[in-house]
Length: 181
Image (cartoon, rainbow, N blue to C red):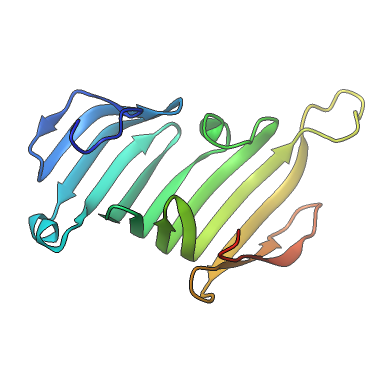
């Protein structure tokens, strides 16, 4: 595992083989996954890449994906996951928020750590946030449910449409990230 995992990734309880194995836990940047399982496709190594499937339990949820890695590219296919926002606080700026997050991506491609292509959906359900203006002791304000749909875009661009799915805050729009970020 040390040959493939970056130094900032801590892995414990490794079992099985390089081709099909698991770990009791894996942590990075304050985020911890458990019951990690992988299955590597050995023929992918002949093509100069590492490909396989990975699944794990994460705090309050799960994640699973097909994965292809080269020296500068990472591609996720059939990426599925669900958890609470509070479980993501170690890796995302979600303090002061509560709710459920789920992702169902057909594909996600990263080049040098930056997303260059994303197709699929991200959903936030039961979103609650700290109010901007103190409102007499109410700790969190319910904001409703939201969906972000990532759509095909020009090469090395990411485009998404977002919309509320009920609740007091109505939003709809489009966001686009180009190669210049």
